[in-house]
Each structure stands twice: as C-alpha cells, then as structure tokens.
Image (tube, rainbow, N blue to C red):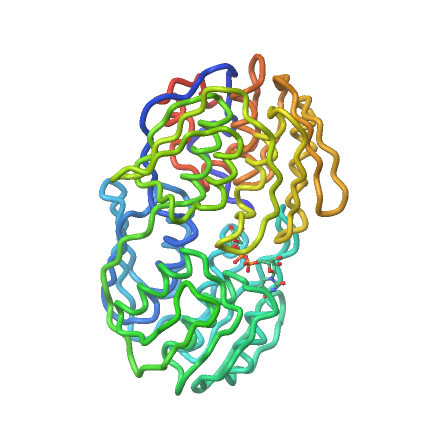
Length: 425
Ligand code: UD1
C-alpha cells in the first residue's frame, strides 16, 4: 500500500544501545478507527468517533467519505471526527484512495445495504501477500447481491439484502466486518459462522449496536445479526491499539527496558504477552494499562500466527526481530499472510541469522545486530526494523518510514521520550 507523507522525512535514524524506560500512551487502533469511520455511512446524520489515532490514513478515509457525499470534520487536537452522512451517499470508492487504504474496502457492505449499489476499486497487491476478497463477495452474493468486476472495480447491486447463514472458509477480519455491516439493514437474520473474533471486529459490532443494530455473539465464532429497518447516528470511542501496545512490549523486552504502557490492554494481548514472559519479561497489569520490565538477554520462543486469540500476524515481524537477539533458536510459522517474511531480507542486512522455508522461519539469536541502511516494506515490518535498530551497534537508517507513520503516530518522538536516540532524516 502507498500513502507517502510529504510532511516528514521519510527516513528513521536509529542509534542502538538505549534501554527504554518511562511511560508511553497508546492511541486508538488504526484497524478499528478507519472502519468505524466507514461504517458511519450506515446512518444518516452526525456520528462522532473519538480516540482517533493521529495518522494520515484517518485523513484519507475522511477524503473517501467526503467524496461519497459526507461532510467530515476532523479535530486533530481532540482526536475526533464528526461525520455528517447524507440521506443517500454516492456509491463509488475510487482507486486512488482504495490503493492507499486497505480499509476502504469496508465501505462495500454499508453502501450496498444502504444505497443498493457499491462500486469499490479492487485494492490490488500488497507487500504482505495476496489479500483476496472472495469471502466478502461470496457472502454478499449469498445475501442476494449481484456482483461482478469491471475495469478494476467491484460492482455490487441489491434491491434489498436478505439474511442467511454464511460459513467463512477462514475467519477473515475484513469479510466478517463487511458481512456484519451489510446484514444489519438486511431483511431477516444472518448468521456468520467461523467469524473473526478480533477486538477490532467486536469494536465495530458494539458501534453498530449503539446505532440500533441487533447483534449477538461478538467475540465468538458465531455472530448473529437480526436486520433492522434503520440505524441512528451515534458517538463511539475507538478501542486502544493492541498491536501498537504489543510493539511497545516487544521494544521493552528487546532493549532490557522498563516501561509503563498506558491504555495497553493485557486481555487483548494474552498470547504475545505469554511469549514475552517465556522470554523473561516481568509483566504487571495496572489500572491504566500494564508495566513491562526486562533485566536479562531474552530467551528464544516459538511463534505460530493464527487468527485471534492466537498470536497476531501483525506482531510476527517483531517476534523475528526479538528472536534475532535472543538466546537460542526459534521457529516462527506464518499462517495468515504468505508474504510476511519479505522483510527478513532486510533483517539479514543487520546480521540476523534467519532461514526461511515456505511459511516457516528459523531464527538463531546472536548477541547484537550490526547496523546498516534498510528499507521498511510495510507498517509492521518497518516497526520491527526500528526495534532491530535499537539493539544494533551504531546507526541504522530505515528508508520508506512513511509506512511506519501509517500505524505508529509520532513513533520517533515517543521513542525519544523513552530514552532512545531516534530521529527523522
Ligand atoms: C486485517 C488487518 C491486518 C491484519 C489482518 C489479520 C485491517 C485494515 N487490516 O486485514 O492488519 O494483519 O486483519 O489480523 O484491518 N482472505 C481470503 N479471501 C477473503 C478474505 C481474506 O483469502 O475474501 C485471506 C487473506 O488473503 C489472508 C487471510 O484470509 O490470507 C486473512 O485475511 P483477513 O483476516 O481478511 O485480513 P484483512 O481484513 O485484510
């Protein structure tokens, strides 16, 4: 995905060696905030979304909604958006925005069910692998939509969707969200089996319920939606970003740090935090978040990524970076996105010992990585390279830092506050 920001230098300059210490606060989740914005299309009138992260993608989503006829006011100081949705939004999500922003796909279900038509550009390739839409399309077709693709767009039409039983072949986050948001205004009951259980999906479900939708089973593998005739605008706070909180926890463990992660929810990070405890970290749940402390070289640990509540694929690159300096050898298995080991080539430039075979990577830890210029290939790979830079000798330059900006607001300055020497440029 592109989304290059012109405002900041595109490079992160990381001087290795610091032990992170202090306090960091986690903002709203990117993967929830952008979808909440898209889903507000379901109710005419003014919906307010608070606790938005300060990332460019929020502005891209606002632009997409503006083009669909909404009036979006973003207050960057207060981290909120007021989205005024018209009676009849336009139906077309253009390629120039969809290619920047995967979450644009989330307008498909809401537009189809409210307007009876959605034209959404196909998002195309991605640095983490192929990301099909076949489950979205099959589910909407089962609900009575006519769907075809034309000149790079999915064209979906339906007079009125009808509830039905849909069994997903894989608990896809995006497909669960699109089908749930289409079903809320369909006739009758929709049951989604093998649904995704991610906290982001639950957040969107709760948002829909506060708009008047009838949904049960959120957070389980079976979600039942009873269609209603209309939804009302609402106000909703985005849940904190579990992947950003997890990234801070990995950073603390790798740098033998001692940090307090405000708004970090241990209940959303059970598997990754268990792994960090195996590595030697001491984690204490606190009222406002959690505290993580590490006082020795981490021990290696195996990881197999799986849908929630399994180990998140979005933290897999951090697990590789950590194991690259751990004591022992780890086996990392990627089960969600086949292209997610691409960044390993960058880590090899830092001297890491990683052998990739299909969807497995064997990582043998060494004491210290050796700094070099590297390139961020996606958001999470970029963050993992910054963490690797923190435990390298010398200065690591990470090019294409705009990827990192898409998921980690003010990453360099937050790291500086924790005592690391990380700058832009
Ligand atoms: C979302 C997150 C992403 C995270 C992922 C898994 C957003 C914007 N992105 O992506 O950060 O890594 O969940 O937690 O929220 N698949 C199909 N056909 C489909 C749908 C999915 O084959 O119709 C496959 C995908 O190619 C992938 C797997 O299912 O291999 C999981 O994809 P999915 O859960 O849908 O991820 P996203 O919603 O794209």
